[in-house]
Length: 133
Image 1: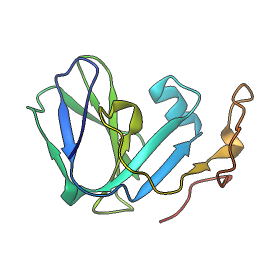
Image 2: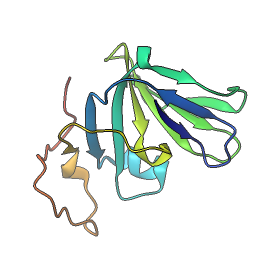
Image 3: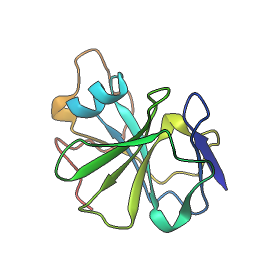
Image 4: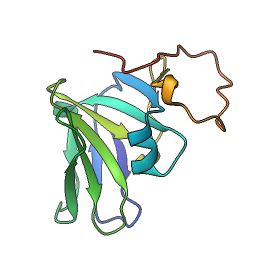
């Protein structure tokens, strides 16, 4: 079982299953929401996911018609994204994981939006926009 949490520890979660998708998103929305040059996500099935704590401080922000983003209202940690275009999947912000899961081959998406001060120094596939399931 792989566990994760927000920074203040108010919200804890776990998943028991494989990571199905591993991506690095360079879109401007992810950059602003996470305050970083890009965000890495682990896609897992919703069936494999569970909350381990109360979710009283968990808030949802509908960042678009497609995506809901879940965050802790106490510390501001961005925890996961649920997309209504991919029922049954959730995308965990990798920075909130306490453990290191096995990962499939990764890729970069929205590289057309990448900031100039990030150099991609790997051989992972790069896509100009969103990678469709």
